[in-house]
Length: 332
Image (cartoon, rainbow, N blue to C red; front, top):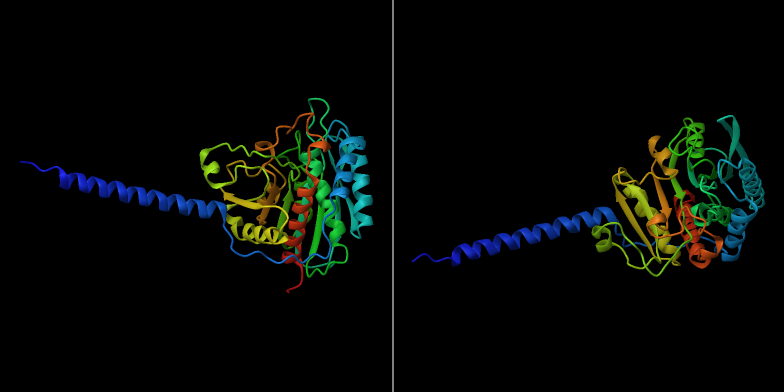
């Protein structure tokens, strides 16, 4: 009589082996994607970000300088003048970077800290907002990142820096200039010439936090938090080392949880200004609250200053400050 037990045992072993293999592959993928870190780099800042100042900057950009889109260059000029004044008051060596596109003059605003020469670290955020549909305050996108840049300047004043740091407020990140040679970040990259740029950090929507975190795919739900109380560091596969460094420094600031994602650029990872540094072969990461994945006010009139969490936003700025001090500061 035929005994089916040996066959059943073999099938069970095969299924068990397959399950273990799949679990191992998932674990490996999770490690590659999430870049777990065990080290937290100590906080080197002498000051902490001020939530009240962040709110003041966001309110100016969303009210006095609105609408900040390409159809209203006079509003962009008001925003640029405000940025120039704030960056100068913070001790930066400030200059405009004007350029012409579609018959108009646009401008990036740049503040330098540390040495005048040598390798460069860039931190940037776009100050324009999406237009074309009516009133858009553009608080999270991207007055939040711009306000973070201004507060970062205040915190860097007098800090010991072994490398030059450029804080760049970009214009023309939004359509109709997105992915064109006249994105402000593309203009900035071309101006660098042969300058050695060690890394770029892009601040893209850093102020919206929520009790729930939507995810577009079960893979992300399995790997990342279900509460929208964290900030993300995002890069390509080749940015893994920079991602880990920035993540470790941000965690060391110890004010807001930090997660990270590394993956192929084709997963829409290049939807902000870091794309132009990647095109130039420069390591770059984006610091973000996950943008439209989390924020229902994205590119709508509901993206107002009142919807942002300035305490957590200050924690993000502290984390970016610590990243800058570890990447560009003198060796401890």
